[in-house]
Image (cartoon, rainbow, N blue to C red; front, side):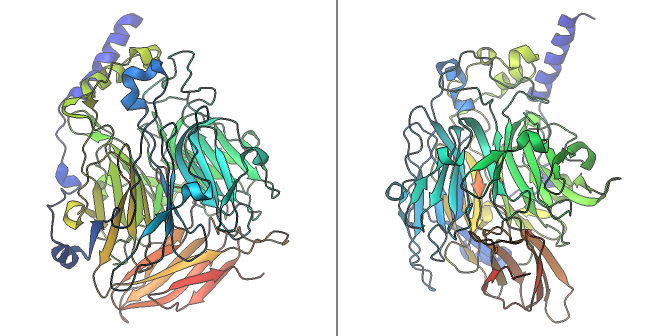
Length: 617
């Protein structure tokens, strides 16, 4: 058979896959029921979300960039990757603030300072925009690229979280000056000159008490997306593309500078990464790194005691089947002290059914590493449309982690779809796929637009989508999802960043009688302090809570970890929030600090935020 005939057969096969009518079993994920009143939702599900951005003083609206004219015919497609949001208490006043990034040339990022004016009766709760005043607004200057997301950590251990902004372009690092302003230290820190990144995270990979920085490129680093020399910039394959951006592991030297140790530790990936999360998943005491990759398989870099990393995705199960990974988040969904990994993908009825992955640890491999099985279908969290960011959190304080997922790619003309054209290029041979000039013009067509979000509550044995029933009815093109107790009420509110659309703030109301407890950890590292201490932000710390619901209730446990960047273009609060259900009796909280030190807090009081400092050796 000639090569030409083979290509024709392969092309026809993929087009058939994409345009054939696929009958989805929607009952497998549970169809979200219609809108309920707040009272009905509280009675049935224990919580209700009210979109409150404008009443809270939040008016931010994301905008997309305009890239090189060689991409003009598919601009809505390639420029729809931004919209990040992060939660941080940047000034140390005990109230959580919000930072949102814009993706338009000349567009401003917004930093919303929490005024702390929420009262117990539900009044107040407003924010003040201070980005320009504090020097972190104007980061989309011509020639420097545009912002994709932001993450925070106290990289110098001085007590105030510092800001890293990743971009398609020049990354930026700002040192927090005591909560009063920010000093740009990008050049002094020795950051890469240009990274086309869609995700990053802080981690202390070598446990030296200093937060290190991991940046994951999406496009190749040698591409200035505003001045392309060639249209051959797209992925070489829709399944096994390796012509994406390189990765950077930047070791914190402790003197305000960073050292690129990527090659030295063995991280070689050039896949098209959209999401990263870091945590000790192998039980070695050192954080591993999980990458959710577009146009390919996910990757899992196992940490060899801070000396090197091995990619073991295929061995442990998460790196076997190629999909379109766009999210990486962690949750102890069964309350067994084990963290599952949620990776979002694409599901579009009648076109492409990849389904999302929920990787649940079910045992060990021959080498003793965790073995994962995808239980998304079984647990009914597989079908979420063109899925983007997701976040686990106990939204109704019943003691089980729920899952919020945002979705939607390009919402344009409602009666026009790009899927047929998309199918044609997806089925093409590599030389066609990687050349943007062969991609069909998008015009004003939509691609998986106007999608209803998913909010799955955890029933214990499966999840149920209740999004519209509890007040989540927006159909914007969602990207980043964060959860945080923004008003210090003991409940998780939800902030969602949307492409070319407003930043949403869903204020949570939880039914009476549902208890909770929170922990805010502070590592012992300080400038000039010697010895084995955890980084001051406590990134990588694990807390396992043990409690009962009622004196005779079964023992319940839940493990959570402090992360600094996860999901998609997102960072949630450093605090760890545990819903407890009714009549809760907390027995203990067991902390494993990033330094390896352990600590047990007996019978921590419920309904309280516990601020815990790392004890001395």
